[in-house]
Length: 196
Ligand code: URA
Image (cartoon, rainbow, N blue to C red; front, side):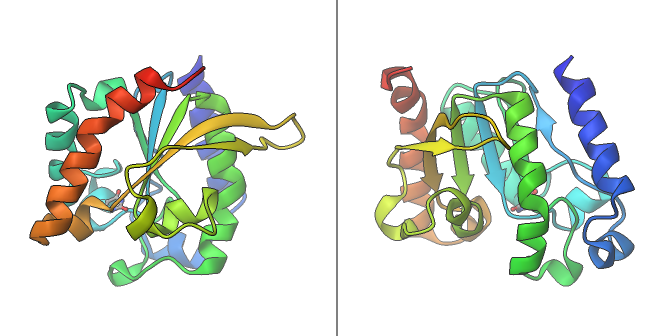
């Protein structure tokens, strides 16, 4: 079962002591939430305080906004899978460092390989940079890009990457909020009309 494989990957991250400083200050590792067999995976940055306490991604104010946008687009958390690049809360919600993001990259790719989605929605600059390193979020938000992703030594696997603004950044910024909601509402159409 897909969830068993994700649980095994989580156990491996803990056993290999990835980012020990973060692990030492975090309450727990936050692996992901939603449907492990989903066609769409949302990728945020790192857990915050609420996520660290509850062990689930996007359960604070940004998560409430994400849930509202999912509902407006006709989806629930059970239709998609939600995760972060970095799986432990950085102290005081600082940005994850380059080293921390790099340490978690192989595990994020393995997580995606297990879920095998058709589309990835990056939330914010940090997760966008993984897949579209040369893109600017202000120019590319809401536009789907086909990208070949290599899951360890396998042949390149084509995914649809849809970069969106981060819900936390847009939450209290009126114009960004409108842009994010507009982009979000296009997501089902973008995915339905994209070639397999
Ligand atoms: N912001 C993120 O990037 N991820 C979360 O899980 C919560 C807030």
